[in-house]
Image (cartoon, rainbow, N blue to C red; front, side, top):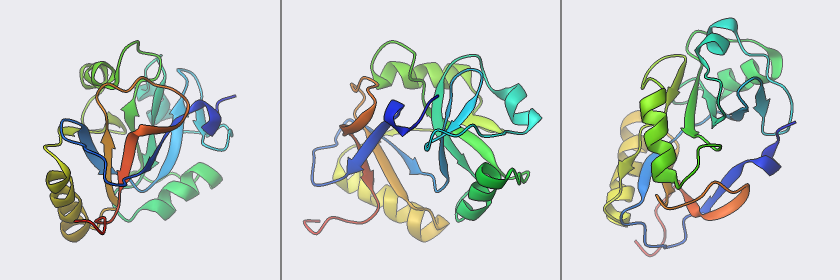
Length: 177
């Protein structure tokens, strides 16, 4: 059984230097972990995924999010909890936990192993030039697209279950900005 204790989790941004880190949009969905055979929820329950999604998943582990786009949390929740899948729901991977190496290596592996679009895909990351860059990206996501925020990842982080200072969530501008 896989549960949140097997997954790596971020902390809230508190002023850390994030220049050179990788940033991505924070998806508003349900955390999910594909172990190569079974999709698991954060709570350790098996998620009954549709055949199309199962067929698109690889034989290696992926950590990611089941989501239905921006403002689609309720659709994702209904799919995961009640097996009510809509065509807009997808699984987006942000990490490949079993790939040896730091996040930059694991992310490169994802880019080369999964499509950017489709029912199973990877979440694109861009290099962050610093907090101003991350704040600008966050504001664009929130104002222009109705998104939730940004996730910042230290490219040198190793996949270790639990909370990590090497993954930071940015959903509002810190008071110091």
